[in-house]
Length: 196
Image (spheres, rainbow, N blue to C red):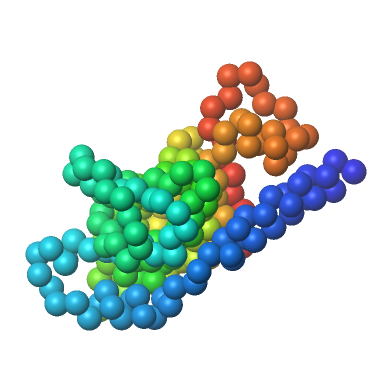
């Protein structure tokens, strides 16, 4: 019975996340990837590693100490920290066609993106400070451990090539989604992962 309860609670949370993410406007990956690769290489454009899109609501970016409000179609660079309020949704599409979809309260930093379009080889690391995200790997995730990493406050995840839903949940969110789990009083952020 306990195993069935856990599965049912997982299924409800997973269904909720998939429903929320599927309601977002879809972005044409081929269009975005073509747009990124067709740009001429100038010093400013070589820093661009992706584009933000599918915004629902207000999302902000911290770059070089400045806070920028985003509207969609914004260029993303390594080192950018992207934050959304609790009811905001957005997508990040990288040059290798890796796609992240972020739910409300997302707070992430793109730490590393090094990608050679000719060979398809590269490295990617993103830090998820808070919130929920879904990802679909692009060309970088090639089955090698260590080339695609997701860091969370208390967990580091090596992605070999798949899709997944990850979250950094508050104790209140854990209590809401998983009422059968008893947390110690001094609990901080809790990592959640469902890989497909």
